[in-house]
Image (tube, helix red, strand yellow):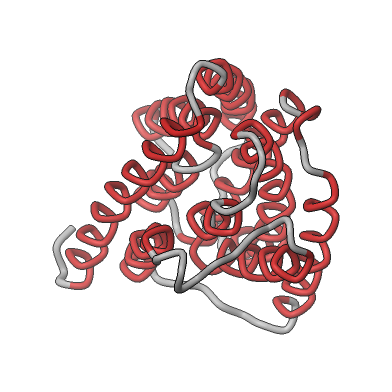
Length: 249
């Protein structure tokens, strides 16, 4: 990668980590879009998974006292099932369809609650959450909006939502890295590792800053801003994907 690409990725790492620190999502959606513009799909998935694992992992550490451990433990059952299934599958979207998939994911949060009433605090729902979120994370690269659907009806504090979602995403991103690492290495598509060493502290710094902003927000503000931000990002990605299908760079 040239110096401009490295600068863009480092700046995107900090900004998106800050956004994720506030909302527990949206940042990963943005970062995946930036990476997909610069890197091949398999490499974008691995780099995204690495940065997001650091960002989510640090957020989980900062908010560790708020993690709903029961939900997380049951979530791992579903995530393990998805990982086991993915071992037997070989799948990779091209860039146009990747952007369209990224754009459609936020639409999940607009499904009326009476149509899709999910609650991560219920064991069956938590297992379904682990399976579907991990699977979508591997296919589209992100799964925050779907994860949010499972937590929208969960009666816990906003900090517990962000903390628990962060812990679950570390697992999902780990599965994604494992799925794409060999194709990325085989294609020689991964960027040099030294810039990732710069990205890691930026992800931690952005996450720390975002978490401080989270503490200043109300639960109502948190839920309202999340919905509109990810929807706007999704619309941009759909347009980008359609332009790529039409042959416009």
